[in-house]
Image (cartoon, rainbow, N blue to C red; front, side, top):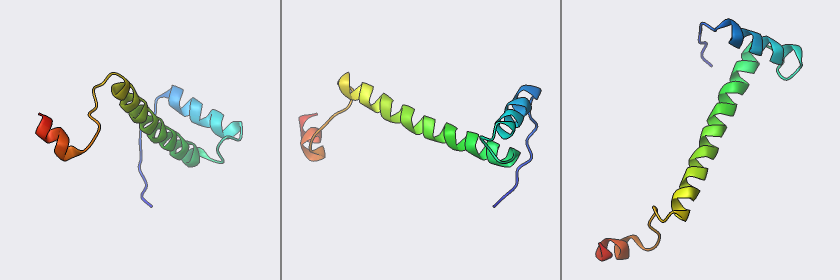
Length: 72
């Protein structure tokens, strides 16, 4: 596991301390790891939702790839 030193704004430091104080995270490092994991999961969800929107809007082609290529 690697270690990363990152300067934080006072607001971010306060948020991390709040997570630890409230028991959401056991320490600052865990709070940051949780935040990064949450962000990564949120990005994945947004990607799926975007794909669903594009599918509904007809922006995504469906079917056999070879047949689609012939149709174009």
